[in-house]
Image (cartoon, rainbow, N blue to C red; front, side):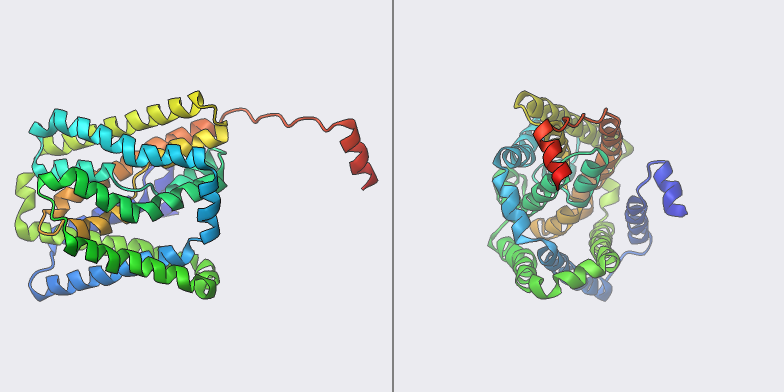
Length: 340
């Protein structure tokens, strides 16, 4: 009942959980030994998260997705080329009005992979190519484990990011190794995970909430909120909105100019414009040691909700388009059907 009421007003229950977690971290931050335990728990949670990703992702889905190379290339270009270029332009133009941590957070949004669940869900609502969306979002996240750290090194290192050999080691141990282990064990545990999707979803989302709590607890200990003003929040929201609007417009225009079907256009628009909170927060925890992590992930949390509102509206608009008429069967086909 509560979930249905929230959905009616366009409110994501998970966003409320995230905001509640931030509130708990502000009121009851982990300190001393509690902070040490929280950090260790986060490392375990991140590894578990990517193990489950590996166990659920079918290698066949990755291969089939790669075969649709024109669509995948456009989504990849939007995710890892268009977004970073727009981010560089926005941060150059408005960087003087925001703190370095928030600028870093905005650029971090731009180098993340696409979402999986919401991209597929919105593609389905919009009557798009769901199979292609599944492949595209999955491949985006698979590449993201390597491409995102590389883009962080290339584009953000000059801004004081602690990207190093130690960060690469953490990526390998906490992301790539668990993911590979999940892929290896998938033949034995894949069916079990499918059977208990609700439990796995709780583990997924619970892991992210734990990382958020730890990030904002550290922020409280470092006194980061004294650095954020209402003007900062408004500016970040506006830049997130401009960024998303630009990508939605460009992906729509390009997919139509390049002759994609409406179903494939929907995949390109939704998969090419999303950024993953589920992958982003664990990666931020590894890639930005010593940073004010609460501030760094704030633009991502805001972008996540903005993209949900915008894409939910867009999906409903796509869904209202007239159904394409199916061609009438030819006479030989009708005769063959009758004989059968």
